[in-house]
View 1 (tube, helix red, strand yellow):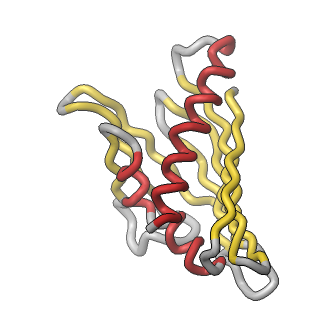
View 2: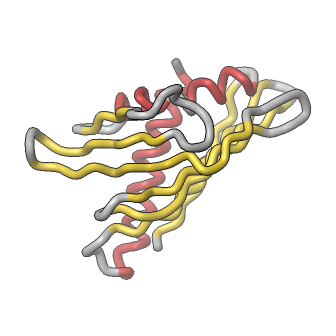
Length: 144
């Protein structure tokens, strides 16, 4: 399983950073050939399902995920969102923490990925690609 961690510091207050990083549909804005839909409503909270579709035309795959923990940040408390990937080609978990700081907030994204048909020896490359792709997602979301 490939595991990676991304951290960003932002001057945004924790509530605004949380709103941006949990704006699921916007996640696809920073990933080529990917769109994210939220078939459940409202798009927040435990039980929310989101589906990232990566591909060109009919060639591609869906990466369905479900929010299994949803604790928005509050005064003196970090926000935590945990997702479980439930797809056939991609399995794993993700955790997004938003911690208030004196100068804004600290966002930590930890992902555990398993891609079907990829050998375990590819995990370091998958983790490096994940850090790059999801780092770009965080940068896009936090920059507004």
